[in-house]
Structure formats: structure tokens, C-alpha cells
Amino acid sequence: LLAIPAVMASGFYQLYRSWELGSPIAPGPTALATLIAFVVGYGVIVWFLRLVSTRGYMPFVVYRVALGCVVLVLLATGVLSAT
Image (cartoon, rainbow, N blue to C red; front, side):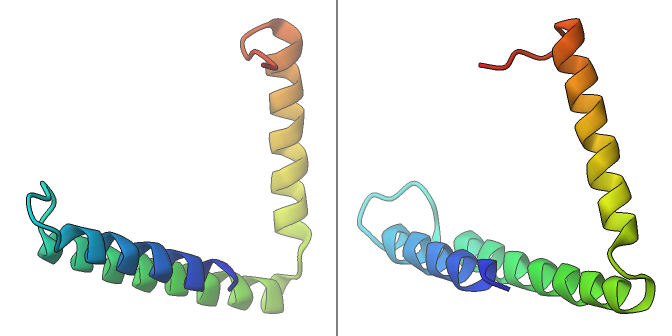
């Protein structure tokens, strides 16, 4: 929920900058991208809150622990660099 104002503010800032003379980015695609980012972000928030209210946080916990284990294995084998 905290990301909504940041996404909207960055979109409006880019929209403002696209109206400057000589800007290579047109205002139309910038406005459309901001609207799409808002709709997708809002949809994901609604979906995640529904998931949490019906199943709890356990699927998210399992996902995070599994992802952490994969990252640790990749770091240990040298596939990923820590820097």
C-alpha cells in the first residue's frame, strides 16, 4: 500500500518532464504506463490481501524460506557473487 503514492508520484513526475520541449518521450505513453502500473499494483494488493485472509501467511513464509535457501546455495557454489 505504501508503494501506490510512490508509483503515482514518479509517473506524474515523468509525465511533467515529458511535456518539456525536446523530450524524447511523449506524454501519452507515460500517462498510460502510470495508469497501468497503478491498476496492476492495486490488483496485486487486492489479490495478496485476499490470499492472506483465506490462507494466512504460511505460503509466503514457505516461498521466502525456499528462495533464501536457493540464494544461499547459489552463493556457496559461486554461481552468484555477494558483491
